[in-house]
Image (cartoon, rainbow, N blue to C red; front, top):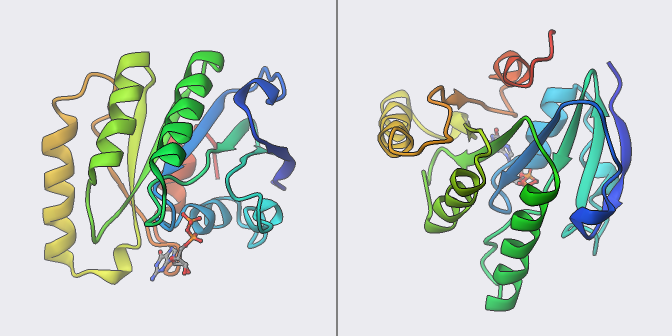
Length: 190
Ligand code: GDP
C-alpha cells in the first residue's frame, strides 16, 4: 500500500471530493502526528512531503489503502496567539460541518494527558456528532505504571463524552508500537 499525497489546502472547502471513508488526524503541535502517519503508512516521508516550512498550518490529504487520511494542522503550540487559536477553531468547525468523516483520531501525548485545548477539540466532535478515538503517543517515554494511569484518566474523561469511542490506542512511533491497532481503527487490513 503506497500512500498518495493529494495536496495541501488552507481551507476545508478546498478539499477534494471523495467517496472513500475519511479519517481525520488531530492533535497538538509536536504530539507526534507526522511520526504516527509515517509509522502507519510505513513510509518515512509521507507526512514530511507536505511539511515544508510555511505550509505546516495547512490541511494535508493522503489517499492510503481504501481510505483518505486528512491531517489537520497541529494546534496549541506554545507561541500561538489568540487569533491563531481562533483560526484553528474555525478550521476545525468548518471541516466538521463540510466533511462527513468516518472518525477523527485525536492524538494525546502520553506524558501530558488531556490539555484544555484537547478538551475543546473533543467538545467540537461531540457537538457535531463526529465519532473520535484517542491515540496516545510516545509511550516509550514513560513507564508502564505511568502509562496505565494516563490511560485510566483518559477513560474517565471519555466515558462522559457522547461521541468518543471507548477504546484507547497506545502507540510509540519510535518503537513501532500500535501500528496494527491504528490501521484496524481505520478499517485497513494489514
Ligand atoms: P507533530 O508536530 O505532531 O507532527 O510531531 P512530530 O511527529 O514531528 O514529532 C515531534 C517530536 O516528537 C519529534 O522530535 C519526534 O521525533 C518526536 N516523537 C514523535 N513520536 C515519538 C515517539 O513515539 N517516541 C519518541 N520518543 N519521540 C517521538
